[in-house]
Image 1 (cartoon, helix red, strand yellow):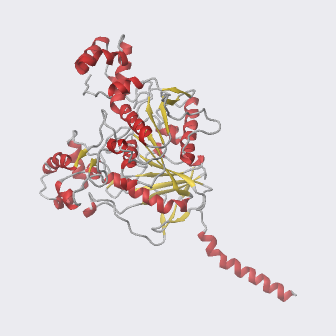
Image 2 (cartoon, helix red, strand yellow):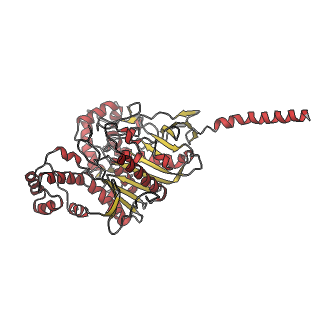
Image 3 (cartoon, one colour):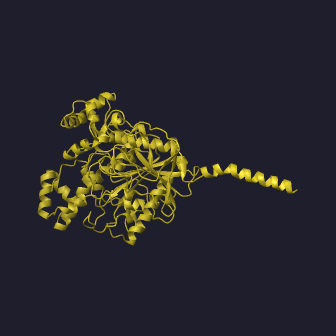
Length: 522
């Protein structure tokens, strides 16, 4: 009996020893991707697992500069995924952009994955794929305001990405077009598609559902979202869309729309100024020298073009024909997108003169929609018109286009809770980009602001709306004010304290702007 007991104990001990390697490999912070294993870390007191600096494409350096993203190589062992990858090459674009990575580099095609601590390979959580803003010339996934500490706690997997910017992401020349069978530019947009393909192939291992991906972005990120909806290359890689302040529909801010031939003419003239005689010589130039030259040419912008491959026609034409992705859309903008016009004092006389000069025979109608009976009212109208012409009108046109031909629900918002003055944004405004920290729950990453209880309350509500939409295509859920679907009565929600909803009172302004937006200087 004693011998049998000894044998049984030995067998149990042997089984435990055999199980040790398996137990070690069951580390929840280690995940196997198609390229190799990665090990992340926990953040927010262990509530979220973070995997940072994951490569989704080969470094676009040397001969790969100004080429579509290429597959990257596999690795052996376990890759450390506890630090952000370098942000993409860029000049100093915006004072309020802060990065948590090692610095700028051409080798920058990395993404980050954030998942609830309890998520596992079979969790099938909705995926939210964030595209940062910055005018296609600045920004990165490592900005603190995009941190993934909080949004995953709402039951989603969050992905944030870097993509090539400025001259490195959107240069167009005849030689580049010849090399790629007539197509050139849009490398930054193709990076986004490569990252979405990585998500399709890998996100299940982190607990995400590749069949339920929501792409969302702000400013240039929202321009990109509206563009991806129209790009054949991106179809099927996402299932819902959120756009915050921006769209690839012509307004005062136009990021894209020229043909390869048009862009090659202007970009080619700039390249010639560098003193190089061939594409090979251009690729041989240090990235820092190229970037320095772009910063000296402040009027030179590099943005998406109609390249014949990624985009075969203007984005609005695709929507007009109903060829865009037919997926649910949640979109809107902030109440004071034109708050920068507050820095230019406005008076009754100056506003009337501006209206007469710019709109001529339409001036009377313009002044009814943007009145200026007092200096204060004129200042307010300057802010309103500036914001409409800058970005709101284009976003409105996108929403209208999707409502007309998108065959899917549309939800529209207006973000209105004004922030208190700060060193970056003087005045009390719901300014451009003000919504980002509310969406991510990262209000405490802006220490120069005074954060009020109503700010935290609205942030919780917005995170609820955004993640509900990612889960079901409908932002509504328990404990939230009802958000009406954008239908024949132009219903939208007002994100304020408190949240309200009702018909759009500003539609006459946008219908007026459909007649044309002349250049305005005041």
